[in-house]
Amino acid sequence: MRMKVVLAAVAVMSLALVLTACGGSGGGDTSNLKQIEQQRAGEYVVTLLSKTGQLKQGPNKFVLEFRKASDNQLTDVGNVQLNSLMPMPGMSPMSGGASATPSGTPGRYQVESDFQMVGTWNFTVKFGNGQQARFALKAQ
Image 1 (cartoon, helix red, strand yellow):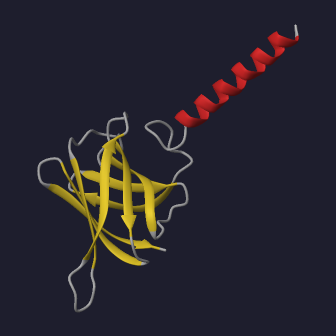
Image 2 (tube, helix red, strand yellow):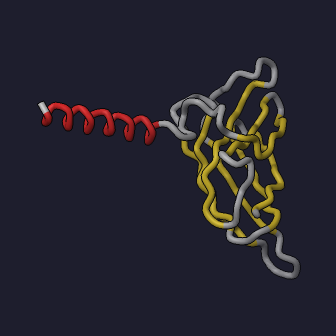
């Protein structure tokens, strides 16, 4: 009897861990995320979201969404390319790494970036047929 209780407890804990790992800011629910920035680009509204609504110096993970402005529905824009640069007076701009991966939900991408310094970064999102959105993102 005791062994069954232990096995049942282990099964429940394992299920809870799997559900927690699969949750977060993946392809599904983003209601727990806060807006970092939003911009209209042609017929699209491009939104950056994170758990805190802010970006920090160093590695960051956040969500990038594309919605049709006409109906506010998520929409697949195909390949997404990112570029982040920090202007450096008297020097070449500093480049920060950034990549976007489809989340499994059309129109939503997982972004990993690295802002090496505190300050304003020029963050460019290229998508669709040559469309782009430019953001001035502050890393704190």
